[in-house]
Image (tube, rainbow, N blue to C red; front, top):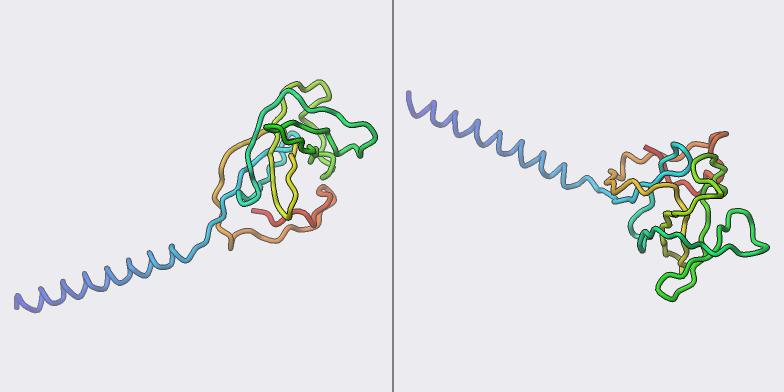
Length: 154
């Protein structure tokens, strides 16, 4: 009969709705972190979580300081606040890209643990959402110095 087909159709619809609800619930359990992706050197891409990022600026003026370690590029004046700027390429031992004659600088202004300062980077690439569970632990490598400061890799 006709009633049996209708009941089977309703059961099929109910099963499909249940499967769809389970898929939606699974997707909503996935946690994402948003990062600003940037480049150091010729091809090294990194990301910094937005929770630490205050702003990104482009500037022509970084004031050098005498007698500081080589990874300290200098200071910048950001709305009346003097901030130290660190060159991450020296810190991580990355070569390439920016030269001493560079006149336009990308700086990431970051804040955390009571400190606020700038990181000099070669290029700001854009926003990236990463699934937290897919970020794997950073592995020691001869090419990457200071691995203890890298949260993970994708």
